Image: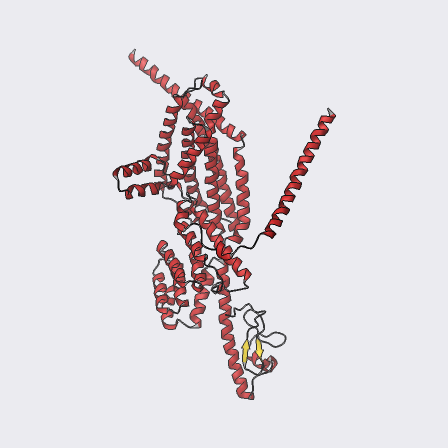
Length: 278
Length: 306
């Protein structure tokens, strides 16, 4: 009898987990569709125009360094456009649902607040994935064009593309955290500040080391570990020289991104689940 | 109903015209104000760069490669603009131009991207005529950041060779020769610098290697012209010998190239229709009548005159 009850409970947990997965997937799919409907992917047109112009004209301006410039320009544009999408679309994910009052319709169904947030997050990550993959293909094609064939830089840009994508996933999670309790404008500003500070993480560490007072050292050390270390995801410049990060480094940064995103989404869920929509 | 529709169309046309005409007026006004603007004192606009390399790197937020490219292209445009406005000066002889911002620009580009080798090469070629210490410092900075880039030792050796410091040049080629993957001629250059540093054959070897190795079009063009110049110096020496032989035979210097025609044919020197020998760029040499002296045609030749 006890065994039957235990089996039934376990089966019910499995079904709940499976149900949760499908609910998150449905929300993610809708978030992706919404981003496409909002013409977020139109930035790709601008990107293609930028790369086409660079491929044609940069050779004249760069003294024969067009391959390096195309990689720098293409991957930097990928990060910049991705950052704008992560911030401006990310901060509106939850806010728009509240503003349009569609959130009531969502929560009238058996959808948890955490599931809603994670679904929205994954939907935007999918949009960003499409964005970076198309852009990566664009940079590769531009390299093929300027080299009149296969270019040895093509395989080395993809690890850098992966690093950029991980950085954008981190930023999206942070944007979602801020948007779970703040207005879109303030969330965008705070996320942008985190992006800037995240790239100064090496300075935070050296500040901490150079500080005379113990409390200041603690504060800076704390900030160093608390804020996301985005500088580790900057691999554009080495990629332009044909250098790829080691597998160990990519694994370590991917693990860091996974852990940090989990923490940030958990915090966002915590805040969001206490939010009153009345 | 039709009135409303007509009004809407009229409004659209009026606004459209306003946009087009307004933009045209704005463009004309910009041109007018550009023409009225007093010329800017170059001493003011070229005081210094706003940011040094370290600050630029700090605020680049992971876009340092792109910023380095921008500083590099800016440096090329900066030098190119100055060269355009002051005639066809050779890239390695720009001392008379005021290009004091070049060193800070290249320094910033290489601080932002220390593995970017072309700015170091450009510094090694252009800066010695302006500030040799900056040229040495920047190339040494490149070597410190890229100890396995043998090309940078070649450039540093070139700077010392230009300064007549053959011992130092030899040392640089020797150090570069030890770098894995360095070509064997680096070791040969080490010995050549000590034995024969000031000779034309050493100069020819240096410019030949520079022409072969450089990816920068302006540097290759400079090396090509220096090779033409070396060939021309050899040709002129040979012509002077012919003049001396002619004078010994006839007791006077030739008054026209035609007098030397049979000799040129015998030694297979290419000549044009008037019988004048051609310099390496294919331009006829100029004979100084009765002086046993030959010169390049400064108006037409591609060979550097300096």
